[in-house]
Image (cartoon, rainbow, N blue to C red; front, side, top):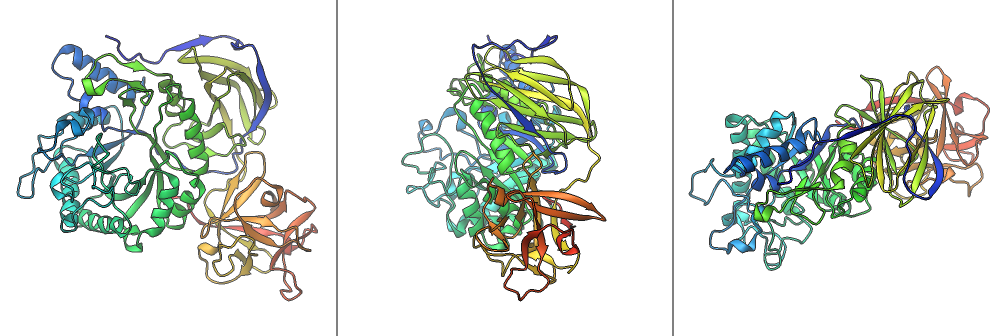
Length: 618
């Protein structure tokens, strides 16, 4: 039997000797503590389907040992330290269907076998066992989700989906399905001691995957168009009437494109029941727009599922960093920490054959670089490296930076922490590379708040260093108001047209006047509007360049320097021309836009206040 190994630390003294014949050119990463982004809730995994199998390893002492070691490796302090679990409320397949139509591991039983049947609360004991063990290890975020209603509520008569891949819940059973889900979470709370924070009634509902003619793997059900709003509203009302604290999350689409477009299609009455926008990130390029939707509708935001077949973990590490930087979720969940094989699991185990021999992939250790060291309660701060993510523990005054080197060559990286008030002398680096699980190295003393480390090929390294910051911190949504006129920058008629000039307004504050400051990590900043997700930009194609709205970008005309002037006032300088400052056009009728760039004179028309309005997330 091959049991799951615990973490191993190799302690080295002095400089790290990096294997490999060549090294790529050194580059520098800057981290900016003045901007505070999302506060972290945690890392997680779905229990379907591995818990449905592993939770039943109780026949022999050997199987019980395998079961307990696997659970420990995912949730304990010596393992991945995951603190979020997603429990799958099974639908239960039609007993007249061949068992082979659904993989063994994915045969999650339901609790209600027919319209006139009584609930059978003995079902799904395997998954529930793992859930309880996860709670005992310290898991504190619980979400329930459904892949399909019970077979007898479906149009096709099977939980594998509709015959055309579309809607598969009978119209007459929408309220019944909402009651089923509510009854299950009520049972968990009152009888089994688990209170689900959220309940997701759908899984990838617009994907078209759930076609009973082609899906011979798992449960799945389409909810297209208005059907999504229908089930959300019914479920939200049922949960409220049951006096449950559990709230709705939705819609767990397969990619960010479908997620934000699907969100736009929901009725406002459905959105009112939703606490959190969930999205999977298997594909899509709409990360920013997904975040913009959550911000505009004041919802929390999670990446509730992602998975890949790269056993090395490099693809996973790159996906995590991209999601954290662009989507800015407050939690991130891997699909199945333990999976059937092919590199999909952090640990691979032949679940369909109830194997006892597991393979721990490199992915396990690379995932652990994030999950073990970026902990709940830490706040993300921006840096200027697409391969790094930075988080700060204000209670411990500890900065954590996780950097991936996806190259086949070693890579020297200098981390410049000069924006911080103070930086400790000792830096610890923990590396997972092609030869080592966790390789801990004392980098040595920082010099002028900088340190350099050479990362091995195809590796991830976590850096930890003590740091403090006593300067001004910007976090949340702000109204940007001119000192002279007292008017605030606002959208022109809530326009979303690129190139539209901003106006100055003294009207009642709305989302059209609220902006978030995003740092690039190197002292430059971007300002994003809450109502439309577009950014401050300067139009240099015109005399007296007006302040206009545009999509995100790294060009100088879309980036800004912010300078504190005293008395709460700030100067906005465009990166493309640092001699110009953002100016309030008091005259209004001289052919110049309300807000424009002019030569810096330190006039009150060039001084701006940040008026705090709201947190980034509720």
